[in-house]
Length: 77
Image 1 (cartoon, rainbow, N blue to C red):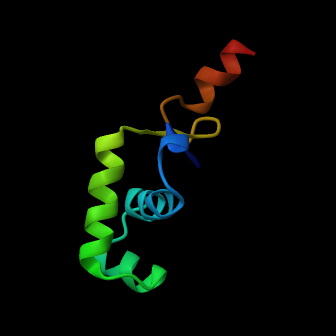
Image 2 (spheres, one colour):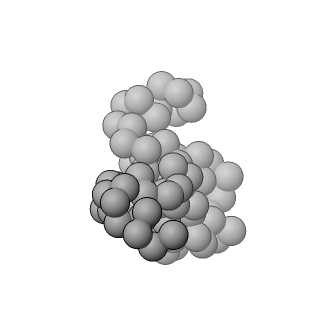
Image 3 (cartoon, rainbow, N blue to C red):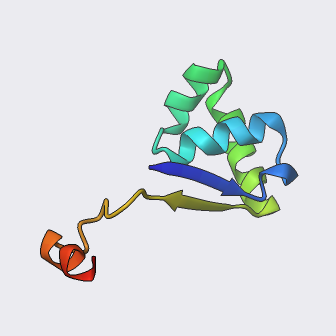
């Protein structure tokens, strides 16, 4: 699985760092500890990034979600 952030060029370096970790499911406390920031700073950076607008696109290789069973894919071949 790959995560692509569209509109990242509008974000500062720190905002990008925070966004990546937050979109991976990290809490503000975990992000703060990892980046040596205050928890309030993490929240501010994340909210500022959201206001600038970005999109997170998840790229899944093949049939990761199991939407097709092997019989379906064999019939198409």
